[in-house]
Image (cartoon, rainbow, N blue to C red; front, side):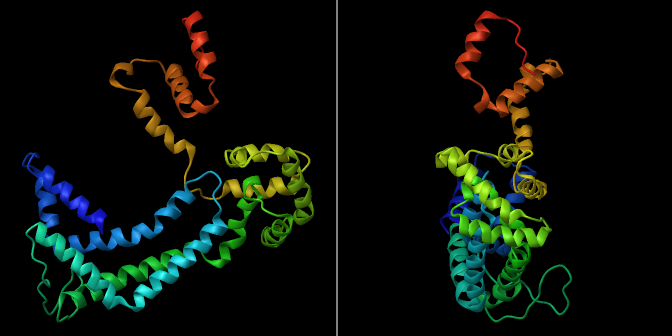
Length: 302
């Protein structure tokens, strides 16, 4: 609730400093629409439920099995809200009304006609009933269906592939149970047998939790060469799955920071080198790099 209020208050503060143009006209028209104010309140409420999941899915060591269990709890909560649609719609209408009063916008039922092609036109006696039928229930139904399709039990063996990451391996017994499902789903023979060696390998390394968490799947894959063929096959399948985030996507943001107007004449090799240094800054030894830059004028950045 406070997020939607804050957004509208920020708009009210900045509105006087904006020039009268298309952007100002569009925002003014939007804030005066009853649908827009109610939708902002609705989206802010249910997006907050998914915010922790978003951070988990964008991490290096994402535990999709644990994330799926949390998603099921979210689906259960949203289903309860769907059953008590009238009460939750009333709360959102009260919030939208409070925001409308601050913006001098009166919330009322849109004009109802016999035939309507461009918006929903349910019959309702009050504002709560109208928003419940036209926006609240369809939005929750779409929300629930999307989550159930993307995090269904049929995809559980595919999500369980991430358990082979050393950071997510808890006990050998749990790992064997999970790898049996993976082996049956992907037809990877002898994977459960190889699991005991894989678990023992990382246990003997005696690495701290933070060190294991910093490992990418590509780094883990290097340990499987020749000695762990079935584990390597499972990790290759895991790497081929659609990712929620990718390091290569950050290259666009890096390019914007590196290639400024003052650096627009640099050659391609130097630009590639500077971008690589920016993306992989953790791998660069800063003190050694600065010390070498004082001795030589030309550095190989590729």
